[in-house]
Image (cartoon, rainbow, N blue to C red; front, side, top):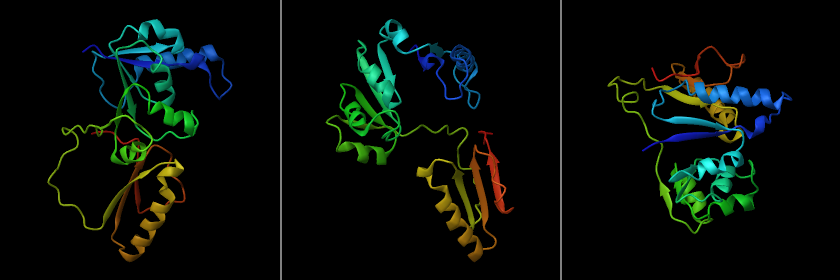
Length: 211
């Protein structure tokens, strides 16, 4: 298959007050150079559009289009493409669409794919379409059983600023466990800067890489 990843530059609109054209050029550069955190096949074409509407004729030339974020599903639904797929990776209530409009996207004439069982359960009562559960793939050349004996008292957790992840509660629990088991090893990973208030027994890996 010939595969293309389409980026929408939104006319360079941004919340930083920067010139739109400058932001568009920056996004165009990022489109050409990223991703840097994993090896993307050279056979995949990356296309940065000034707007999705701008590229409608180009997009209509494809056999299959896969929508990602909810607002892209609204756009893809209007295209004259034979096969339309909607890859649902979260319940995007009140992100870019209202609850009513979000639910509407789940009933478009598109094939629906969800990446988790909780999403499948959450959306099932809101859609008259079949929900195809396909979990995110794991590269077993990187993630595999290393046959190493794990320390009994050890924990690994994601540090994320999204309130829905509720890192604060998880961290409070870990601190209580540490009091009960002083030999507890805590490994935390994420992308935000390490908070200065964390105790030194917390091992933090920022921008974790596959190897």
